[in-house]
Amino acid sequence: MQFKDKIVVVTGAGRGIGQEIARAFAEGGAKVALISRSESSCGGAAEEINKSHPGSCSAYPVDVSSHDAVLETAKRIAAELGAVNILVNNAGVTRDGLLMRMKEDDWDTVLDTNLKGAFNTVKAFMRPMMKGENSRIINIASVIGLIGNAGQANYSASKAGLIGFTKAVARELAGRAVTCNAIAPGFITTDMTDQLPDNVKEGIIGKIPLATFGTTEDIAQTVLFLASPAARYVTGQVIAVDGGMTM
Ligand code: NAP
Image (cartoon, rainbow, N blue to C red; front, side, top):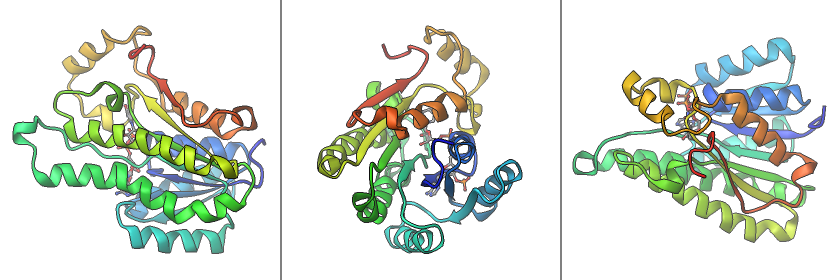
């Protein structure tokens, strides 16, 4: 129960990696606010986790790309759960396509969600986190933000931007003992990667030294480490959890 009485916000927690992160914190005794776009998604995920960890999770549907809506949600979370200690920015989308064919809207949607979304939540939650003790911000980036990928100019830029944002926030908030780190997952089995055709998946596995996709638990366990007292002296870092793909 190492997160007992901690208040944790996880964005993109309706499914996949975010839901697993929320479950891991609930298992550790935290009170978790699950954010996703649709009410049915974060509501369903919260209900499912509450079956094994009653009262641990609450759902807050909001579009993280909307600055004002995130501010309103932060006020609700503060009133209903209390001051936030740990913020996990995990909400993310892809709108893949070669640059020649990429529409302006594909660029805007991905940047607004993956990068501006993190700006919005950090702005909304940072004041109480700065007043609290040993607050943590953990951003879920991607190996694609480190190495790029054809067909993902928007996604690569958003995740590289998130890594730069992580380091700037780490420097700005270090004086208040708030750490800010990023995790760069490789290929993890979720709805996002289920969209890939089988021949593409096989090609990717050929480039992963550990020769398999990662699991949502692999990412959740790294998040727990960064949120734990064991990581007190770690800030501004990017931890690749990618089966050795980018070593
Ligand atoms: P996923 O299964 O597609 O789930 C994405 C979650 O983000 C959903 O809960 C979705 O809400 C939420 N979301 C999307 N746009 C949002 C918005 N504007 N406002 C609020 N919530 C929003 O994704 P995943 O595979 O678990 O990935 C999670 C994170 O890890 C993403 O940032 C992704 O880029 C990153 N990542 C994933 C992989 C991978 O291999 N899966 C690899 C590297 C990095 P709804 O449920 O309401 O739609």
